[in-house]
Length: 283
Figure (cartoon, rainbow, N blue to C red):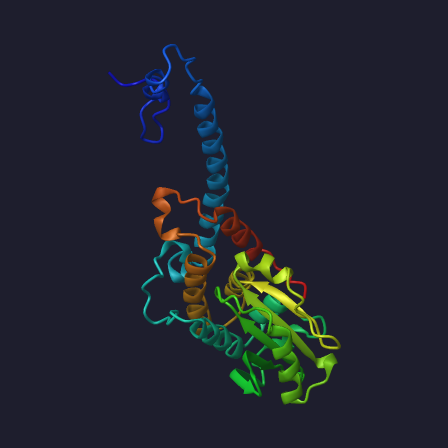
């Protein structure tokens, strides 16, 4: 006969454990396993609520990205070989490529939101340099925009060496001979690294501050750009990069949707919602 109790999650009823205490005590007071049933029911209700919202969002995104088949969440990007993503440098290369090849500038504007720049200033930058070395420092990405200003971006995918970003920006500004007014610094990291970053004394005296970005911000900017008038070729690469970011760096295993994964589900929902907005990210 089937045991009474909660069987929704594939386990027998809690009553099967009632006899455990009797091994040690002759007449134990039986535990109230209903409390745990109530917790499971509450947990299930929360997950159901998240998925009610998620299901509506992904259906909307399937429509937005119909020219690519559907939302990239549905594909497994862990072994997509055209995107080399085994090293931090690979992620930097792809970020630099999409910044450099953007005709509209929507992606960079949404991601960086530099107050002094117009959207037209972000399109087709004058240069996007990778692995720039000067003295003891090396910058991941340095962009020169069409108005002549520069942006320095340090890219992290888990590397704990965060503290040198401000000093790197200082040295790069000297190397490029740029004024403080026309120079901006950013560090791009995993969401899990933000707390560590906030605990550091990361700005250099007399230098432009280092602005914080996460890979979730990149996802939001890519989603907005995929809904813009950017070229189809640019969108095709951005679509692939987006899928890889959200699976591997944001950490939502969308390729397992049939099992209703909960890992970083709230973060994923926030990205999808904000990707449907039109305003640029504040710098």
